[in-house]
Length: 280
Image (tube, rainbow, N blue to C red; front, side, top):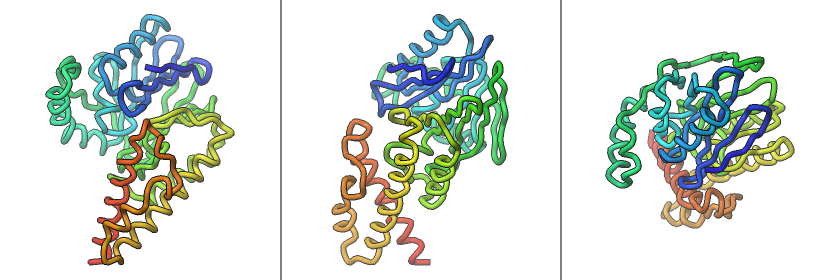
């Protein structure tokens, strides 16, 4: 696990074992807020030990920015914490994550340390949920596009945004909506932030935000164009396979190379939606 202090009493954690997934901690005088957990139990436990033993506070709230297992499995290791998510995330956790856990346990014994799926206690739908921790004001609000259940966490005084999967090195629209995600990214870029903590990958600093946002917006526009071309082509697979991640403006080495597969999944998902829309 990689750890970094990105502002006074605000920490960022990144998995060294799975897809550079991230989590964060906002430390108050008496308790802490955790934003997501890490995918691998040992890394989440290492994060918990740092917060509880080194910093000397307990986690009171966990905010799950999306239902995905790599962000939520670690809820189990904080039994006294209240978990917050989007209402749709709670539904998806109930629907999907038990089977996902059982599959993970078959493949990797480390996941057998998790005995149950912990479901969010508090959910939001529209609007903003506000928390105060010490002198800090924290806003939790929907940022859909990558997934309908996406939420982000803004620490107002520090201008730090934990964006979850709404902001990634390679935008992901497999479960989402390309136009909605474009709008979300554009809105995030206008917040006047000091840092964006992506759901996966490295922290984006103030001077990098404008370019990072535009790069993601441009990528989404390019893959949408590819999908629309593929729908009208006699051999859609040829069009999709020819549109490599590099040709769509992103480096194939991002997220330790996982973006190559994610990019293809993006294109296939968009193609299927465009084809369905054309048939209606």
